[in-house]
Length: 310
Ligand code: ADP
Image 1 (cartoon, protein in one colour):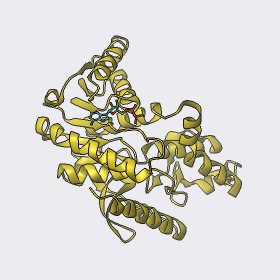
Image 2 (tube, rainbow, N blue to C red):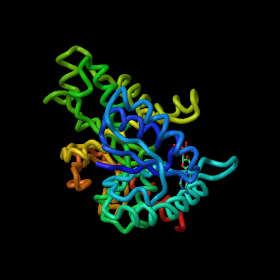
Image 3 (tube, rainbow, N blue to C red):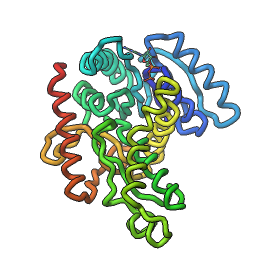
């Protein structure tokens, strides 16, 4: 499948690099309003391809997205000094206003994968601007938070993260909800698994994992200014579920008709992803505290969206 990546900055290029190395797409076309950057990223990544796959990597204009089955939206602007989160959001909404029509003119059948932060709000904006059904406008959401959650649980229990089924729900951000009560290792609850393996999941362990999931990005930002490899690999994983029609369960963000009493809000819950995009939503079993936290996350996102006049 041919794909496009609009926004050839750190996140867009890291996604392109992961996709090219794994050969997940037959062709990647980078588009950026900084055409020199798009060309440079495409060339640099193309030079890695002979060691790994046969993906063609190029840069171009929107019209070159013709035939793309998926377009990753990673374009955005950085925060100016003194700028509020909402003002930044308004400028990123404007970026999407400039981009989305042009993407759909060239590739009307594309599924849009949204990576620009704040990803849930940007997914909601992209859905509205594109007029596409929500199932075809998918934000990377908590895909990375979920991977980290599983990694930390697996590390504590002494079992591969691949044997952990656990999800981070809600906003990709401070209000996200770690789904402890439904987390399983193999077929056991993680509590039972911890007891049998003599590595109990104490309140202290849970607090440490919670902190590790919630604050991972801040630690990375302190050290290197931004994050890109993790989300780049997450976008490759999401794309692979589409290109291979996997029907895989991933925690991704789409506009959801009703979450904890909040209507039409984009946030993450586990969903089945295949060639048509999201084919089903899976509402996890939650305890009372998690229900409440997910509701608060949904309300917070909705309030931000309502405050944004776009
Ligand atoms: P991130 O770390 O999120 O990837 P970057 O600033 O590195 O952030 O990348 C964002 C990219 O989006 C930049 O390369 C920038 O040129 C691009 N961009 C910003 N606005 C537009 C736009 N209107 N059209 C196309 N690309 C854009």
